[in-house]
Structures are given as C-alpha cells and as structure tokens.
Length: 245
Image (cartoon, rainbow, N blue to C red):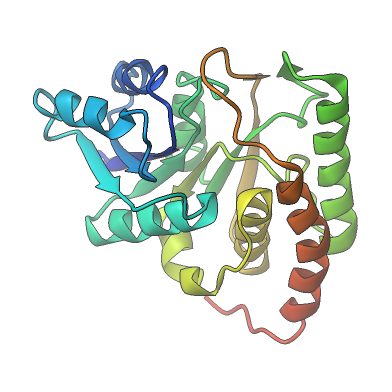
C-alpha cells in the first residue's frame, strides 16, 4: 500500500491548558498525522500557542482562525473543505481535551486504511459503556440519545453522537457539506446518517472515553434539544432526497 496523507482536525475554544500537549501527542503517533486547529477566537490565547508551535512544525501544524464562536458543525465543515482542497486522503476529527486518546487515532486510521472502512467511529458503546469520569446522568443521557437516534433513523450504529472519527476523503467529497444543517451532537448524527444513506462502509472501533481533566466543558442542554427534534426533521427530509454516489 502506498503511504497516505492524513489530517487530524481539532476545533478549539479556550483550550490553552490542553492544546500544546494534544498536538504533541498526535505528532508522537506511529501513523504520520498532520494537525489542523480551527480556533473560534479563543480569548485565552489558544491560537497564539499554536502559532508559536508552528515555528518548529510548519509542515505538519496548520491553523485556521475564525471570528467568534460559530459552532462545532461549521468548524468541522470548514476543516473538511480545507482538507479536501489540500489533498488529504484520511481526515480525522477529535477533541482537544484528551477525552479522546490520541493513541486510538491509529486504530481508527487502520480500520479505514487496512480494514476497508469509509468511516471509522471511536465508539463508547460498541462493547458496553466505556466512559470514565462522567456523572451518571450524563452517561444515561448520552447512551439513550444514541438509542433514540437508532430508533428514529434505522442506523445500527451504537454510538451515534460520537465525535471521534476517521473519514476516507471520498465520503466528504460525496456528502453535500453545505446541506448539513445540525450543529453540536446533531452535526455528528447528521454526518453519520448521510454517510450511511450513501451506502458507505462504517466500522465502530471500541474506545474508552475519559472526561476532560483541564479546561471547561462546552456541553449544554441546547445541544441535546437540537438533536432530539433535529433527528426527526432529518429523517423526514431524507424521504425527499436522492443518495447517489
């Protein structure tokens, strides 16, 4: 197999406590990954830390700065378009706070590169409930959100809201990114649903999710509310769409 060009997209807002360490951890992996940071105007200086690191990693570390908090979904779509324009073969997404173990990037990549997946999902619920340091209420909310999504959509994916993933570029080339409407957890669901509807091969890779140790969570009740109603609207609108590769 020829060597591929791989990118990890990490959206940030006020992640100064984590950003340098997470970038170094990604670069330390045996799979050669480049990193794209998409910073939404962090007032804590996250982007400045990245710029300082770019001085010695200019070929592997990239930064897009946006004016203010524009949403997780739009951050990833911006990153996906950038990745496609710059010729990456495999595009991963992960959080900056170490809730996703950088070592698992290799497993997601290999599920695609060697295992033939078009989308590999780092799944908290593929082999039980593998979540550390979350309050029980949040675990139950997340788990039953995935159950709800499976019921409405018909997808067999256990972790429908997962944000730790690896795409083959052909998936992102096929999905009409400008038509993705949901944000937050809803965005993650809609991207998986579109991938599934187009008939791409999806593999769930079991991971252990560990809640952040540094910095503040960006989770809000509105994210779950959007997913609740957005999934129904998404399912209904899918009846009027053609999914042809």
